[in-house]
Length: 186
Image 1: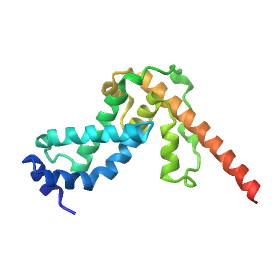
Image 2 (image 1 turned 135 degrees about the horizontal axis):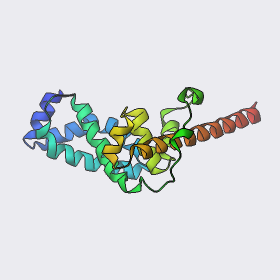
Image 3 (image 1 turned 90 degrees about the vertical axis):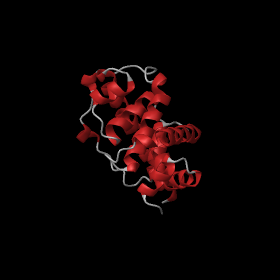
């Protein structure tokens, strides 16, 4: 495994071998990010490909202010947001006052594999999925999300609330199915 500094220098001079090494070293982790923002693996691959094109074009602007992985992850997130931007208004708003307390929604997720959780996220409507990822996983504030996506802060909050509600319903439904199958086998 090559060090980031070597990869960066090689990519800056357009070394195809170094670009391939950078891709091989980071495509897995960045694909996982792209999958969280997309409904299908095909969409995630498109996001990843477009992201790497941007990474190779912008590698000269990398300033070591954060890790290379973090910098590239940010590019993937922004690419995914742009990919989904036109879909953010397709779903009805919820009143922000109807938001549930996160503590009340605690559900044991340790029984779920990464792939099962990813599958649940991918079932969310596009707007909800993007906002949920940005807020719950990436750690952005609703004000930042509003600026990034071009929606209002209230829309960000309502989409996040809707995403939580839908995820909770999907998890509860999944739990019922698991319990039913366990009873049948048992």
